[in-house]
Amino acid sequence: MKPALAETCPPGIETAPVAETDVVWIDAETPTTTAEPTMLSIREMSETFAVTPRALRFYESKGLLHPTRDQGARIYGPTDQRQLALILKRRRLGFTIAEICQMVDGGPGHASRPTLKLTRQKCLDQISMFSRQISDALQVVAELQQLYRSLSRG
Image (cartoon, rainbow, N blue to C red; front, side, top):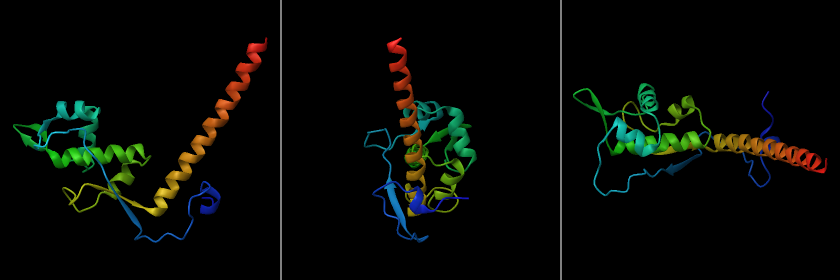
């Protein structure tokens, strides 16, 4: 059973009721800084974004990327580059691939605007999860420091 929101929320985080229509839009920046639209091969895309070609094919299989084909080779345009930046941002925020697929704004094909759509409740859930992980990690650090001190005395 999921604990009540007030119990899992870190201090200082508002716990007002959340409506399904509450959303936040977060734009992602691509690593490319050129003013001209750049078309990238799968190798160039994987190097630019520090992901494997296999990951790019996986995101494509899930309908998150839509490269064009040139004689069978995948070609990623600016829209796919922005979309990949959003996918990677979502992953950093702790969302699963299934959740990312549900967040994509727009219908089949490309999203109308490459943005990250989050419900307030989902944000609170992620904050709570990461807060628990931080707390657990701090406990481990404290235990290791105590073990180190006791080993240093001997």
